Length: 357
Image (cartoon, rainbow, N blue to C red):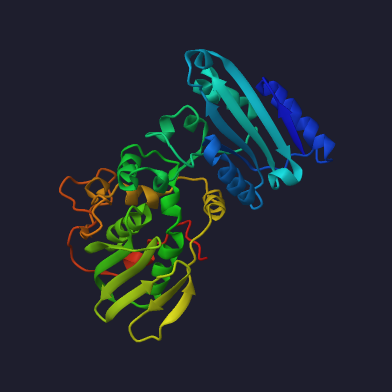
């Protein structure tokens, strides 16, 4: 069921939600959180579709904020709120409110969204594109326990990672980090089986891929060994190689779907490592709403020194540093040479969110 409201208010929208639920015979509210999506008209469809699919696992009220400040001085001075309410089959297992804020009202989105939040329920804000430099200081970000950005959608993804590191606050996360959860889980499981000293690592992935940089930084942080970042043709992450005293552990995914795991003394095997859809990434982030300390330690590890992705012909060593929040000035791209670390350190690094696909 859909209800269109033109030149409306937050109180009328709440009344419309109650009316819509009664009309389809579901007056009880069984939603567990409010997901606020800050987007534009061009990205709204894909973002709402992903959020709707994720709501089948996490029933939620989805509030899409589309700002339309206008181009002319006259348009910018006006203030009008249009809304579209979707419940039932049009909104997954929850309900959706699409807000179009015109003119001056676009600068005060939080005043419209606040009355629409579910009472006594967590709030998550997601910026599919054009995320603010400091999400926790954004007026909408201040309403949330969890703030989701996506460095891959930025014009310069590696620079965006540096911005995320400088402005990090508990509750921040990025979909570039979520994309490597299966990789981290698989590598940690491989090292559980092979207890051998690790001396170095190599991460291969296409240029302008922030997930490749984050995986290199994660390995550097947890293993305390030199990590080299190499550029490949993709798609996305393509391979990770860990050099051990017994040989090379290689996780190679050349086609973006099926990976091959090679370990010394064991037959090669194929593992499912498919590139996931946005809905799966959002659903994973909504499972745990507490601060991600592993992400914090990774993104703040020497991220300012990452090699720019506009130099695909070069490779840069990633170097491990301390796990302090402040990166060292002399830290190279991902990890400083240090004494080899046992694989047990990677074992303990498995993220609290890690799940195998």
